[in-house]
Length: 130
Image 1 (cartoon, rainbow, N blue to C red):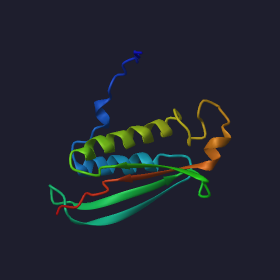
Image 2: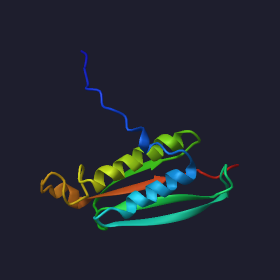
Image 3: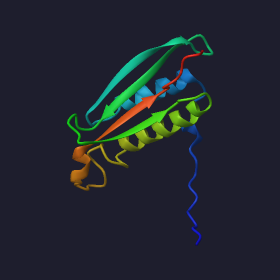
Image 4: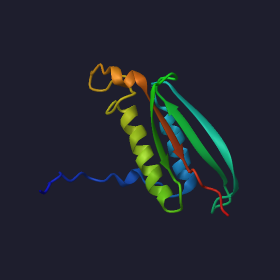
């Protein structure tokens, strides 16, 4: 059995140049959301490679009383932080543009499942130096 999946262009603009750039873009995308969201920052010990303060940011998107939760964690270890940030930034772009649920404009589809699922994002989870 084999599969042939279509290739998709990779938008390299979602990959951050630095921790500071990733955090700034992540927060900016979160602030563009029209749906219910909440963001909580947690200051981490240590400093970043450019002397910046390190913060683990978390976000809740969707209904506060969600009966189900999808948890997406990015930036857990070193270089993975760039990929994890890119994935979460791209997801936030898709939500903002109405290309996936939580935007309230998802293809005009009235999906009752979306009313019961919360999305919890955590980025730069282990950003502190040892």
